[in-house]
Image (cartoon, rainbow over all chains, first blue to last red; front, top):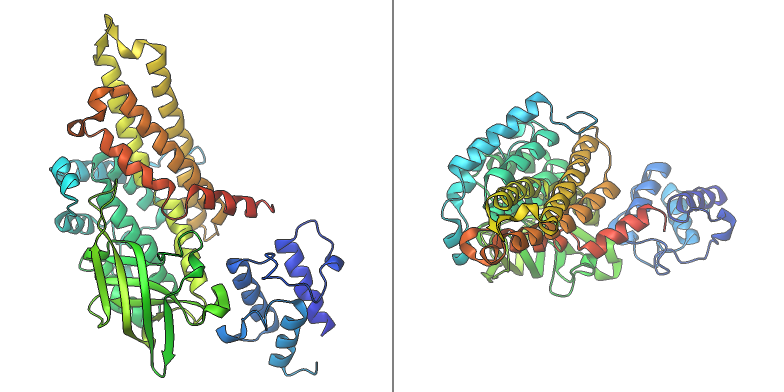
Length: 85
Length: 383
């Protein structure tokens, strides 16, 4: 689970928060509702997650409640992979 | 095309052929057709027979498979030789927001069913994205797509739909759930005769008046599952892809129009005499013409750069927005300068100078306003 979170954090910082320290992006920080990710960036993140973790994410799994914070996204990935949370 | 952005002999030949074709075959009776806002289906068909609509589409789908650089060169030639900017705008909308997304995101069945007709002139494509309350903020769209077994039901209204009054095929964006934001947006291919689809009254415009535009209304419009374009919830990707192509390439024809107008202005400044000498001998006039030339020379590489990047299969989001922003704003200024150089005559419809200005103004609005292009560029710079 921590590996998933770190992978997500590094991707988001490198793509959308250049110059920021990864450690400053907390697990519970909103990504979409805070404006860090717009529609296109969210889509790029979904594509990254699918490609990196070899899973398929349905549109209905990308709502704000499931896909706005690193901890939520990591939980979704872990569930999809069948891992223990 | 070389690094110096000179056309290769092959592209130059192709462009010359386009200029000759456009000069001889297209855009007759332009003042009257502009006034009447009359689209020419006949000229659309001539362009298809020349190969314009099929140029970037592979041969196996009914196109010429010539790629993007030749198309840009041809578009520039058509813009120089053809004074019907509305027709060329309609062809661009058809190519970038209909044919290209179907080529890239379509299934084999969708490509087989639609691309040959889109290439040979039988089908005219249109794109439904903007809504009365979702313009620059396009993904705030309200048009709904409700999934029911093997089909979707569309309800909503799309506005500013170029080609709508004459279109046979629409690529339409709708949300499966507004709560999903952009991730709910899904693309569909909708045929014109689909029950529940209505094209609204013709929308009168300032410029590009020979390119028809209308609202498109969907009322319980049933779309078969096989007409979804791309994955459910991935419409943003389809839309952004088509916008990247459109922003980068839609102004290629206006490069030709800028060149045509520059040459007219030079001719006029040499022949028109005031206070005993040609007006071009006055610095205030000459400087305007110099600026028109500088703008043209700085615009061309930006557009051809998109062609190079796309031919290499590269993304060009930032570069397309730079081209769109710079070329559109240069175009408006140069067409304004042309009116000023022609003076009172430039203001008269019969001279066909003021129409180019009216046709130019929309370029800073469609495919994303200049303000939106600056936002995209700023984002690309990490700001």
